[in-house]
Length: 57
Image (cartoon, rainbow, N blue to C red; front, side, top):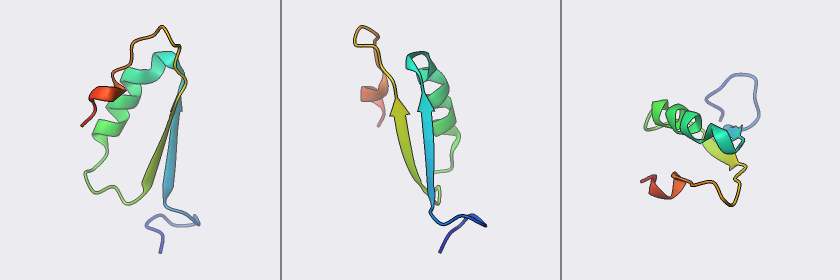
């Protein structure tokens, strides 16, 4: 059963370019602890750009 009306699946996809990492972390940290959907994160990363995703608990 979906928690959201008029959709077939409980999934949210969030994508950003290499510069969107901080904003993506702000969005994810603002979601409730028991968010009723799966979250898929897609991040384009430049190999030379430092990433803080490894520090996410």
